[in-house]
Length: 259
Image 1 (spheres, one colour):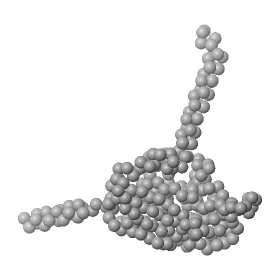
Image 2 (cartoon, one colour; image 1 turned 60 degrees about the horizontal axis):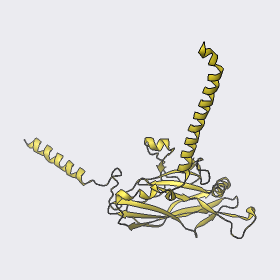
Image 3 (cartoon, rainbow, N blue to C red; image 1 turned 90 degrees about the horizontal axis):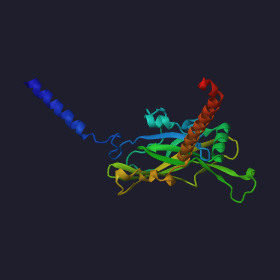
Image 4 (tube, one colour; image 1 turned 180 degrees about the vertical axis):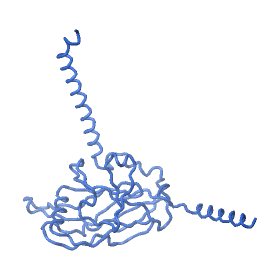
């Protein structure tokens, strides 16, 4: 009887302990200072979105232990390869100029960054399943006619603006600090600190409507439309070629069919 009572008490405590755990990435509910899933996905040229690369193909700050997220079928078909982000954005915790990493870029890495900035490379990340896009750097063409006089800058400081409603993340925006730039115009070794800031703001937008803005074409890059056009174009081409081939075969083999 005594053993049974102890077992019942243990089961009750276990149930109470499980009942208290409400913060979970699966239901998108978090308590203050809880870690929120944050992944980096791909980088690619904005004007040629069919050409994409893994985030760490460029010398960004990589986390100490790179962990690949297990993708769902839709993510695999979309070409997503999610990896842990080097930023720590805990729920409702503000950060001011926090160091993401300190890195010495070689001449070769500086040249890669300059080429990426020149081609308007953008990056894609996911915070609590919300997509985020931002540019890697910018080209200064002001009062410069000759392209050889252009200046190429890399963004060093990223500002995350996150909106929440009670215990849920509603919206994430990215801003770059125009005063915190790294000049990558010349091939030279340079030491750089990548920084980030986080500002949390409360909103009244319900959780059920947080994905509505992504249904508008103006809220995301237009590469989805281009991919669909390519798929439809390929299907139409295959159908036309199949029809032409069937017509030719019918004419050539007409007599054989009659016999």
